[in-house]
Amino acid sequence: MGTGPFKFVEWKTNTHVIIERNNDYWGDKALVDRVIFKVVPEEGARMIALQTGDADMVLFPSPAQLPALRKDPKFTVHETTGIRVVFAGFHAGLPPLDDVRVRQALLHAVDRKAILDNIMEGSAGPALGVLAPGVFGFKDMQLDRLYPFDRAKAKALLNQAGWTPGPDGIMVKGGQRLCSRGWRRAAAIRRTARSPRRSRPCSRTSASRPRCRCSSGPPCSSRFAAIR
Image (cartoon, rainbow, N blue to C red; front, top):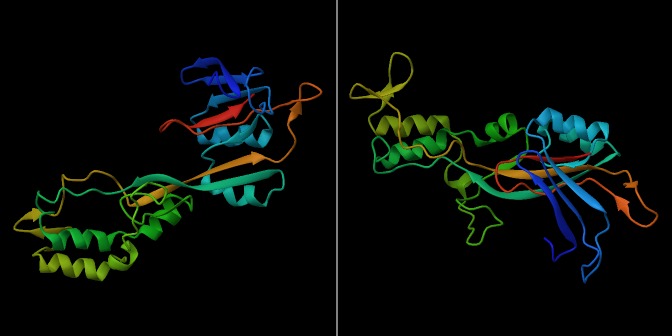
């Protein structure tokens, strides 16, 4: 920023960031005069801004609205696989997870497809390993082959480890209910980033250059929508 095609104008924390075309840039000049990145944390507000034309592009749109956006000729949906893996990490040195059969049972008991379909609403794909495909060192660990969803097998493994259903259905062993204090994350999935944008031309502010509002990826968990 500053030596590239854009120069910094203004940054207001949790509100917006503004950059402008750098006319002194030595390379090809930017095709837009100004870009405004506006922070809109609420998903519904981002989608309203896109649909009403207040935003030309949003990141992290509502997964439930993606099918309609794909069919609407006014919008173009750009999709790319993310590099974030959300997972459940076990502390294998603490009971009951120090028993490999318990760890295997938990893996077989997680219906990842149901999580992807019903919680992520199709906006994520199954994790293939500890790292995402776009990260150096990635290896497909064949998790679906090694640990397919199998509730009966999960129950059998727990039974082998000495766990049996209690009166309320929770597995019990030696008077202790099956629980763990060793969780690190909540699910084994990786997110997929999607960015819909309007297919209409940008509004003109000069005879030669269009002025657009567009967006860029968030630095961490913040969500951006670029609006007027």
